[in-house]
Length: 64
Image 1 (cartoon, rainbow, N blue to C red):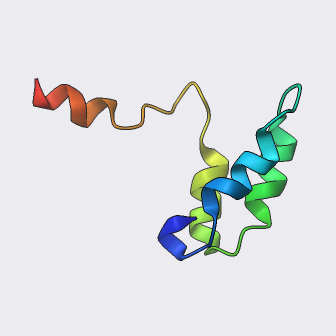
Image 2 (image 1 turned 45 degrees about the horizontal axis):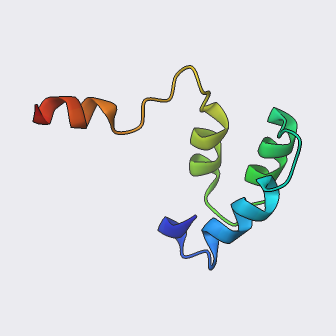
């Protein structure tokens, strides 16, 4: 979201998730689909799963 200049990106995601019992895949996907970002980036985000996400782990491991 920040990459595309969306103001208060962190706050918007925080509003979606804070104080909720749990967030569902459907809720998160609806949030992503409604973002004002290119479709290619939406598809990339929609494809992420906790099992497949490694973040910067590979880059950090190379530093050691």
